[in-house]
Image (cartoon, rainbow, N blue to C red; front, side, top):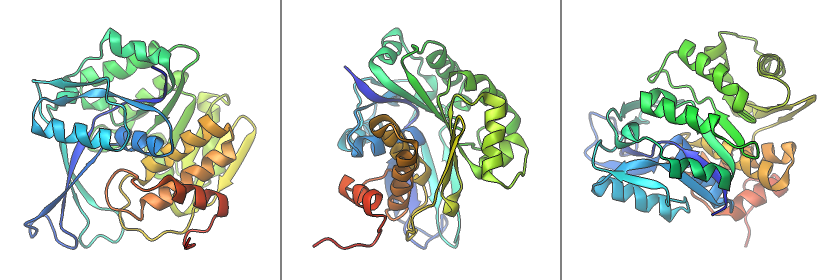
Length: 321
């Protein structure tokens, strides 16, 4: 089985109070399925890439609900295990009264995913994949997760590309521990994604210039990688060897910011794998992020034709009749 993008990460159930109501007030909760790696794989599947998720779910109705949702949006689930040990991971998201950002409460301790040790069969998939995608969310979830990520990186064949999104979460680990892991993992990484705000936290620097921040990453981890710095409304900045490009963001009406960064990564990986062009990859990434912010939920769930239209015409609100 040949896979374009292989991901290892935890699926989560998201519960959100009905619009404009708070955790305390709402009597109804919207259910969404997500998780950083899941969101990326959903976006890649949307664009036509073959994906596969490594991981585990609890063997109960919650695990089955998530499993069906993953399959519904094209994510490969052949290597997803059901475990009797552990529970389903949740997170609660509140938008009310928050113009920018949101309040997030995680409830994922002792999840089935955190207990799951990858097997020899799982590692064999590395030789059948073009790219492995990981994030900085997974290593601090448990010692088992940390070991799994390290083994995936150390056992990867030379032909396998690795993308890594720092995706710093202050509720999972501190900046120093995240930096230590990133320093270790950098040797194995081909595409390095980081948000501008995470750069400042992890590296303790306030350079304030995306180009200089990319140069800093190159000086620390080498110029042979692709570095992608996302900067919100400013768009993204990409460095590869002596090549540097800035791709402005697309205008969008923000409905739900959650998962926009993951949608960006999915678009970028598509452009990187299928078009082998850094500038086009950045364009695909920005288009995916812009469209994702216009829909509710974690996953980028919309038709590929909308992404293509935005990439090729750079017109967001064109109406096709």
